[in-house]
Length: 242
Image (cartoon, rainbow, N blue to C red; front, side):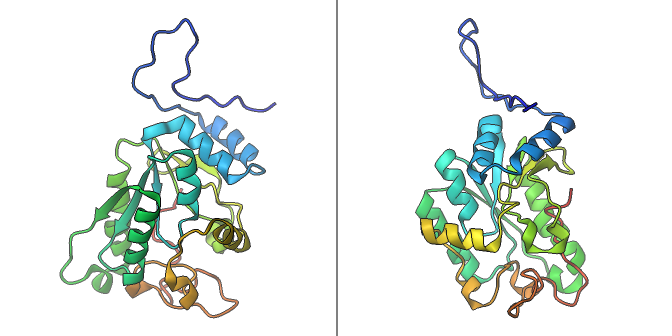
């Protein structure tokens, strides 16, 4: 039986005028059922569900590798809050992409800026650098939110191969990955058809772009994320742990 998806803010003709938007709530069982349903759903439907369910209590975390998810999201919810974490270690091209995307879509953009560390944290404690600089800032950005979206895809690496489309994260928030089932070819096709801004580093051999000190070029045929933390036995920064 298909799950009836509750949408916050709906009322009958006998109800009083609706007050402030209240985000919908879901049990873990409901999220599991939704996850199964969304396996065959277009990404736009997943984004629409998230926007309808959580409204202003939803945020989109963007790495600015490309603006595919942003392009999908603003067509549904133009005022959605987009979060970018400025670690202080980004490539100049990534910061230029942030500005390009902001202007293109007129984004409701929230930049989480990290205070400089001396000595630089990535040099002396690279493991905790990600926790302090990226995860900590995302935790701050998501305070008061009920859900968030990311552009994570299963084909990016083995560690992401079983990523759900919708599930509860370690914070207890609903995490939505509308592009989870997409392939790199799907992304390229969408970018071409919709003229989506992309980070120029992609064409320079960086299919997965993180902080400059911890990101290297990837050889043809290698795992797209193999250039991240190369030789350090690390595959994830911690943003997407569930």
